[in-house]
Length: 238
Image 1 (tube, one colour):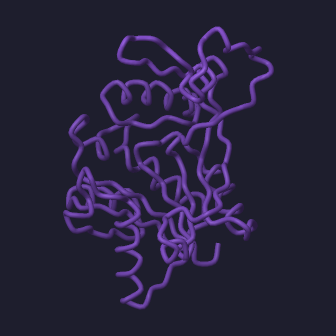
Image 2 (image 1 turned 30 degrees about the vertical axis):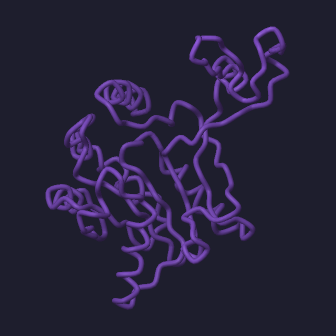
């Protein structure tokens, strides 16, 4: 779609699950699931792997990434903000005469998204001129929603986290509770013009609702095991 690009951020450092971005999942490196689905969506002029790691860069090229952008170490540390890395990359491209305005950010650690999800979000970004960004969201089960979130004080007394109410006042029926959502880390779409406003996301963000079976993110060995199981359920039966 016009000059839309995909950005796949995959830094080398991972303390809780070393090497996770290129660890094999169901027969291919983890980053391959994201790169291949971005390419197969056919909505991008370029699919860019953004990394600080030469090994990840080589694996990304093998997986079909259109371009690989190597970040300086300070923009790929544990404390670095992804928005700073993206701005650095887009500014560098512009210095070389390549200007990209809208982009879709696809975390490789959330491999459950499918081609149609990417296409939907790209279409939303194109059609909804009233928005600065889009974020993938998934509904929170009513059994685990914010209405049941509690705070515990230093004497171990509990109150509702949202308003301090005591349990005796927390009367509700599950069917009366309004749906709430969480950011599922699978897909983000943004306009570069937001950076001029001091934000990656801007002032108006749309939620793209996704089923929970596609919404999982990998950060720990336990997350990896669950993701392998869920990906197995999503793959076509052999």
